[in-house]
Length: 377
Image 1 (tube, one colour):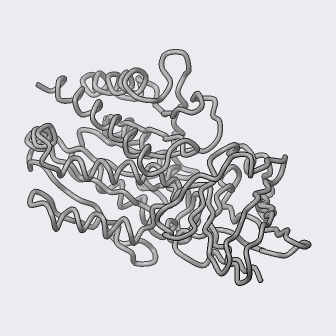
Image 2: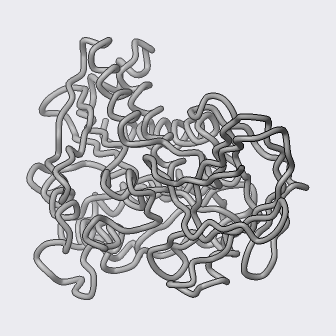
């Protein structure tokens, strides 16, 4: 007998059914148009070794088959023993149609296989990782930005020198964009380490790093939303000129960025498949118009940060224009109201698990901070 389940941290999948011999069907559970592509579920084989096909369909409640399929081709990850260790499924075992994909799997006897299109970084594991760093390293402290709607802590790590320029680094606004979370975990590991350049950075800056700013969405395996059903990237919703963002988490992030002057805001996201602002298998980035900044010095810093994105990362160079931020985003409003420069980087999750995500994120961080150091001397 074959059984399916998505009832675990970061799980996603619904309406599992048996179509015919050795063929099954399910649907993803989406949030809104485009953000309706993620799946992560377990397949339990209670019998002998067998081969099955499983159809994975777009969410009929969202009814955006094009948005679902636009995230393919991508890497399909499977785990057969340790659920924290995945390996890529051979591409020939996944067939993409206009409104669904079909994955062919070989199931060992009496086994459980987890399958996903985005290698998860669960909230519980990420919090344990951050707390372990703080326990092992004397130059750090764990902090909480506050609590979510479901009373979960938004956990971060702080290191560096009080009174120095303050660097804020975050990921997980869209909860299942895990490559961004893996990137920020790696940055936290680096900046709290004894590597000489990390020690030098800590003398020159104060770093506050939060890998998951949407814990409720992460645990629920949501594509985009908070528990309140709000897109945390488009934080100001229908009213970009509102005093505060709509969601609990958005207001906490806004307070974090504005109560004390921030020198730089670094935000990591991810995407799957192909994008017009990128070149497969590489990454992408977003920016605001330079004139959004009224302060000349901060505008110069922001122009430098954009040059870093174009020329010193795995995002496109001068041949492709970056995507422009929505005016209701935190990045746009922080630039407009407070002249806070930012780096907004999207890792291509189709070509990056934890290791590659970490390396790409560290490259962005390293070149960004090195450039900022040079400017402020």
